[in-house]
Length: 428
Ligand code: S3P
Image 1: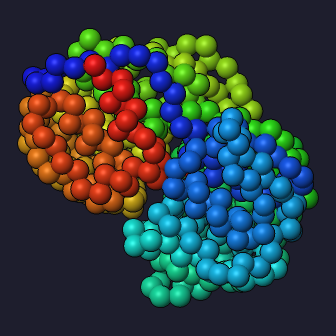
Image 2 (image 1 turned 45 degrees about the vertical axis):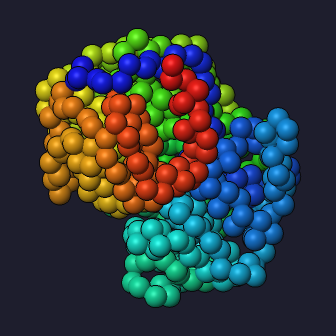
């Protein structure tokens, strides 16, 4: 391990907020189901609240969280949404915008979607083009390929999709459009991406099947309201895992974390790098695999990540760059140009964050190279309003006795409100 100046370790047991990706789907699918669903463990991060508030604007009644954290959604079936009275504001959430494009493409009314400055800069053509091919009428209101946009829903036919981008958001948008249209679809996925939508659609009785990259949603599929219990978010857990690995003498137990194979690239990569991580008590809850994750501080060595492994670790790559800077050897990440299209250009924002703390990271068009055993010092990090960059910088700050200042650290509320308090509680 590199020359760690901090003397603290991270010890104890923790839980993380419910899974953000799964939460968006739980809200959307419950809204399209018939009757009342109960969602346990819905996270209160700003992205999930954006989906909740858009659905409320579409006429769906969603309760505030009860004392036990559960939320009730009064589903109105596949054609029960009402015309929104105002523009649907997806705020910072790409998943909200892209999945809603799918749902709204099959409605009998028109709607408009917008987002904050970061989301307005992110590509929408990846969902708009295939939805237009299905028959939906979608117009960009300001800049080609970007939010804001207007959707005039249409009758969508049964379609065979072969998405060009390896993206769970695109896949899910197409599944949702075909579901809401009642038309069904067949979707061929060349590179596997997280399969939360497929699992939840199956769990809610749609009759969806998946085999060897072929997903089939039957025509006329309907959803049954149900109780959904969400696992802890592995992407949020990853920041605590990284801190435990990097701080000597650490031992952390994370309870009830989702370990969907499509999301475990970070854990698998770390184990290959020599990390002492074990998954305990693995089980299936509401169709999603869960486990307790035990982590002990470890001496890591470098790795190379590329090709089909990228979607399973995409959200954790900024954090992996930090870990790589403390490992033995040089780590290279390739085939990850998608990083440039996230809440910030995460190739540039990761390199700039590390540079501010004295760590060199060479950027590539589709990834980065980081040599290990670098010494971190304090500095001023520009989070660029990106929650994952800000949380990586908080973990980095534990490796130096110098001050690390993070601009707009508040953006962490997008996925993990209370993150700094939680990590501070565990560090001793
Ligand atoms: C997500 C899928 C991923 C991920 C994003 C959430 C989802 O994006 O980066 O944070 O919930 O489907 P892509 O599907 O665009 O790769």
